[in-house]
Length: 321
Ligand code: 13P
Ligand code: SF4
Image 1 (cartoon, rainbow, N blue to C red):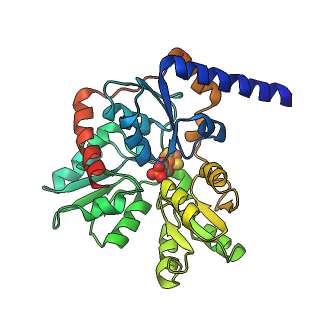
Image 2: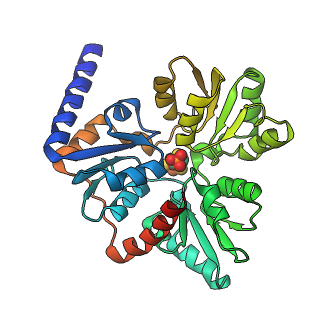
């Protein structure tokens, strides 16, 4: 049984490589993808780097191994390329908390207001927004906003609260949350701190424990001591490389552990919560990736009027950082 499974995996991997060549396709995978998907991707990155790399890759077909809003971002930035996602059900519980009509309702009561949308949103929501941001550049985007105007940050409440505290900018914050990150709480952090007093903590700002992480960072000097970093998944990769610590507690979706371990074989990475798995990211399998390349499915397109308005918000983000 074991042998059969590994033969099947090998056969699928070989087929994917051959089809990729035949189609002239590039595979972009998010840091939360299954290890076997990350291992054969051309790009493995956070949502910001995926958006950037999608625009510079010289390939007529882009297969996005990630969730739907990431495929939409690639389609918006690459109207001349065919953008595929291996499973159309790969959505995002955070993106689903807000609709375009919610943004219009806020604007109606805040004339002259500015809307900043985290990339984890549908294209229609981005089209109603002024700026996009990712966890990798959100602080720079908020700092670049014109002063004295009302601001709505959406849709993640924990990331928004973190941004408000770091930048000091007053803003309305949408009450959305990601089911994976919200589950990592103050207690999760506390337990791991007691268990691993010598470890460095890499905490994604969508986590329910981000306020506690900031408290430790500020009140207990954990940042100065190199113990607490609040960072995007790509910044986690950089920090793990540059830090002198040997052991890290990683508070985000557990898919990042694969790359962290592969790139830093002499360091130890422990999940803040083993249960932190995004069921949408994990919908992408080798078989679905093979079928995607074989049948050129499932194409993701964004209607041009929505795409051009969403592109404005994405381009503003890319111009800032
Ligand atoms: P990054 O911004 O680090 O890519 O994270 C995206 C995401 O979906 C977080 O859950
Ligand atoms: Fe969305 Fe959360 Fe999954 Fe990220 S981890 S894609 S925010 S549901």
